[in-house]
Length: 107
Image (cartoon, rainbow, N blue to C red; front, side):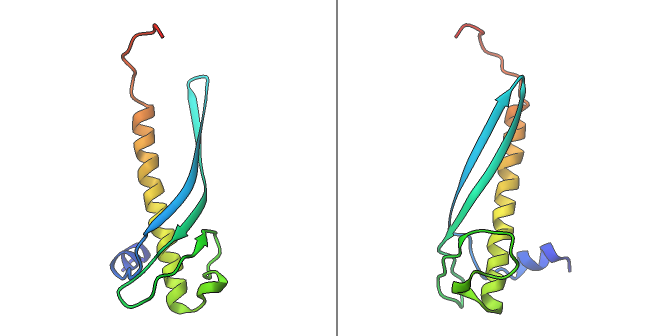
């Protein structure tokens, strides 16, 4: 079983409230985007209490307020689901930005 399948089938934590900032920059028919400041609140599983991980980072271990195997697994689960969510948004953004606009040039 791959890592992605393991994380997907054994997920006990849910991605509840996630806030983040998104910026898009346009110039000369090109664009770039930036997602940042991810903040997690309210993850809860079937057998565990609610925990707010706060600012998501690239560290492998959960923040101090949630040390331990279960919390580390939840920490990775939240980051994994966040990555999937961002990838879906990026795919939609790319599709929308590549569509030809068929409107009037009169603004």
